[in-house]
Image (cartoon, rainbow, N blue to C red; front, side, top):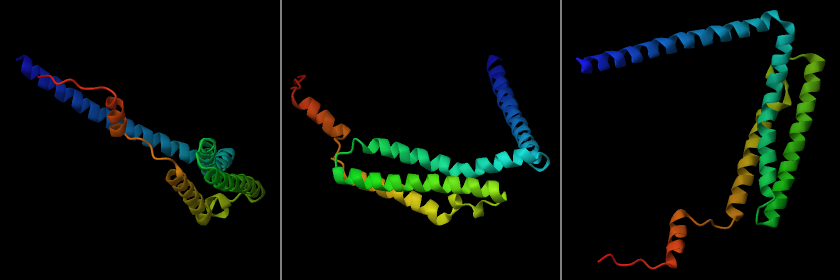
Length: 166
């Protein structure tokens, strides 16, 4: 009898978890519909949302370049360090320039399409992704070979002798 109670309790838990998931999903979708419905009725909300959309690419790429910039300081090769600094400074300057230009363009003309802004230019975004991977590959190829876990364990056990258990 106890065994049947366990299965009934398990079935009830799974069933009500599934029902709760469906209800929460419906509530989230209704909340999103209500939130995005506000865009048509609240003019300042539309402006804040558009400024947020304009700033998204810069908010994604600028921290990546800053993190790469900080990690480049400890790189072994001086030439690769300078090449990396040149690329990172150029791309950071381009992002700052395009972000300021896009915000100025937005406040001047209030375009609602992202295609009008330089931050969303496909060639510029592709160049940034290429630059990140290119510098990453150059830094990885010019770094000294790291010792793997197997080599570390061999080097650690090299000085100690293992006794024969027989």
